[in-house]
Length: 412
Image (tube, rainbow, N blue to C red; front, side, top):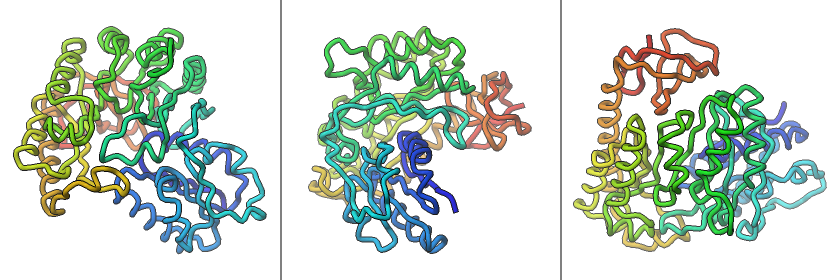
């Protein structure tokens, strides 16, 4: 049997799995599991998947990599199903996959991710199973939010030099991709800390200027407090930069934000959304919000609920708080798990109501929809659309929204 790559987590892992797929093809009957560490549940799911793979493919070589492998390599090395554990930097090195596995007896090959200083563009010219392409322009994070394990899985912030990023974007457009998504752990930190380096807004403007054939450019999750002037200008004046921002908000109460070690206040978040909406009235906002952070009272949680309306959010990624070993939040007074789950449920209900209002408002409008596999697509605001009939993926169609089913728009 051939190589398979199983991917958990974010868009970074999706692009990195393509790098692995191309580099590790010579392993033969093998499965590479590219893990996520953002929650304890993500790690549990990875372990469960590894056990299932071994039952289904008892003779396959099983290699575990990704953020969970980087942060807790011994956990995976202790699993009898696992043959090798590879670090996040090592997985991107072609030499990792071409060495003689038969003579290398190491079960763990995980280096010091904090020692990595440079982030190179990886020549991924297609993303298997995806209509839009993901371009990784940044990796790592210099911030230390008290709940987050990801800096220890990804290292410190570093970014792809602009010339390399633009060249990769040009290659992806030449391959026929109509939409490109800029990704990273903290993409709004692009260029920060390097004297004279361009920021994310400058990169966005250069891609749009130099690649006129690219129909749509989209951003992955951003930290609003880092948004630079050029980025805001592009949002207001570049129609090919899609009017959708997914914000890393995490909470709506100032004391909880302080205990999270976030760098924005509730007022900052609301002001940012209002500013962007003035610049781009058709913008839609999504956000990550954590329910049940340690010490969160009912009143504090109510402010997170209220933030959905005050920021005009249309889509939520809700995370029940998950204590990650080694993080400061894991040492704070924890809430009862029942309370955490109940608050997450209420936050999801709030998000569903906000999505319904957004879908209601779209009915009767005409939207440009990028078609995808399975008879679906997405508008400029990244609202999901069910097409009247399957259409070849990769087309951009001007369609009328005739209704919705509570989750996605229905197109004529």
